[in-house]
Amino acid sequence: MNIFRRLFRIGSAEANSLVDKLEDPIKMTEQGIRDLKSDLGKALEALAEVKALAIRARNDANSDTEKANDYERKAILLLKRAEQGEITMEEADRLASECLVQKEALAANAQVNRTNQEKFEANVNKLDGNIKTLRSNIKRYEVELKTLKARAKVSEATTNINKQLADIDSTSTVSMLERMKEKVDQQEALAESYADIASENTSVDQEIDKALDSGTAQVKAADSLAALKAKMGLGKSEGA
Image (cartoon, rainbow, N blue to C red):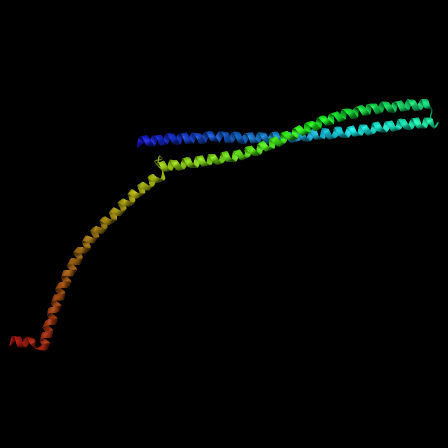
């Protein structure tokens, strides 16, 4: 029996060890999910910033293009005015040339901004894909964490139940019930003993009362018989 109890203790210790080891992955998973959520927050901030850069590059490109087109229109107007004699052709050429220089510079800036816009938008798409993957992983890990916690609770509950069924704890409910049963048996035996003693005393008293009642009944019967005979006159005839 001691060998079995020792085996139960070893098995229980191993089960508790497994539960303890299971708690570490739970804490590690919880921390991992918190870290992923922190990374997700940072990724969302980065996404917003890159989107802002892409929007800014697009707006600058559109603005530079509009300004370049405006300078081209101005150059055309200057040449037309020179043809109409409103300004000299020399002045028109000089100013138109300045307009075209500005146009080329703005067009170059617009092209740079377009290139930057494309790069930023590519980064936005990449970040957006990473964020979706990160969100999916967080949801999956949260589900796995719930399952892990449930398994830990079931394992702990099963260990406690098996421990009670094995009765390896000296202060277990089974031990207390056994002690209570023994105490109740003693009390019942004591009550039966007192009942036997009381029964013996009662039997003696009943015999005495019966003997006394029996004698009294016989005397009363004899007196009644004599009175009946006297009434019938039987006693005188027998005496005569």
